[in-house]
Image (cartoon, rainbow, N blue to C red; front, top):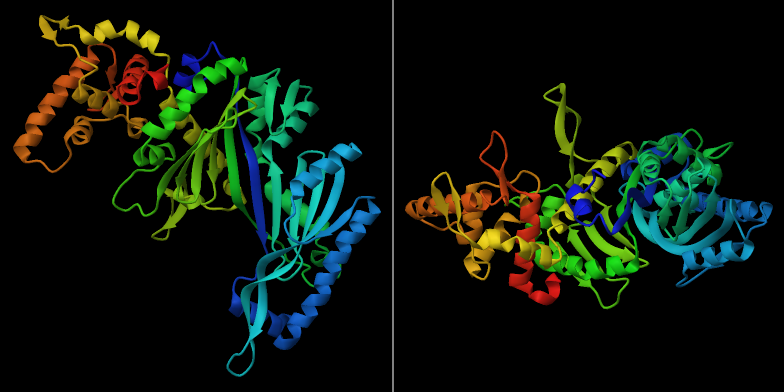
Length: 512
């Protein structure tokens, strides 16, 4: 297991398998009506009708979409339900599946009232003008048990501009793939509590992002929207597809609930107390600087076990950690706004095509990039948690930390973990902000004493930090990054210093 190497190695005795996979993914499809000017011109020139006649004309097409959903449900012998008010669609669908013993095919068509994008007519100079607005309308949900994707739904607004939404689950897709290839597994809800071949399962899971999504989504759109085919007034048009939301999870399966139960509260406490805004941004591949505008928030809910979770928000994206069924530790990155991430791709710059770091777009073609950045975020998060440990092994190493050490005729003093300034030093070098590139002298100096110092003070304190880092280095707790002036914390340093920081700041109860 090369993924999250330090975390997996530390708890290898308790871990059975590890799997990273897309979970909930929502795609949205938009027809190419790019704005109000384009819409008005389309009605005037292409449809050749008066604008005030456009809205009544749309109503008949709305009825056609509803009748098409009713007809499809009737032909396949499945229920068509019209519901108003609050209605738990997923609960209703799962009950239908259990009751009817379904495995593949249409489950039901649900028609509900929702407020969505629409158009209306308003006064304009010379003639009325069509504008986009929001209004309640009927929305159709087609729930399917797809042969390849498992349980999914296709959502269609019945009123112009007929925006579509498609929900699929990467775990359900992976289950169908493993079944096809004859791999043994046990699935519970949207997680796997047993895998015969975790390595092969990971290889299959990695294929999800590279599926021919545009072709697949176009096929589903034509399946439920008759206006795109035959004599439909939208024939010849097609949707532009974006990834509206993507959840990418890393599941660590433990040998028993007792093993996870011993570790999980310590992980929760460490994540909630120790991870700063700078750390969370680092996990998501960002840096905290003066240009950052937005909020970074933490939320901890541990009123019940299993089921406790910690969640970290950065604007519209978030990281969360929770347990499933008391057996699986899940770390999950949820991407709603991909432009907060930067990926390397070809862009036009000064009239030339160049390979540059650019904001990640929502287009479906970027799904492999979603996978890369989310997987990296999960790994950084787990690596930062690898400092959490049973303190007993750490205290076996404490004698090497507290006693003086001689190297090349020079004696280096030991550390006192009870001293606040030494504990602050340990905390500074363990900061999650250093996971990507390590740290240098100035970063530790600023963490300990701040920036508002005179030049003479900065020089004296820089020399002091150099001596402190050297004392950690000769004990094997720090290592120099080759060809740089940067340092990194070693595996032993993560273990020893992490346990001491836990004990100093949060007491014995959170460290054991």
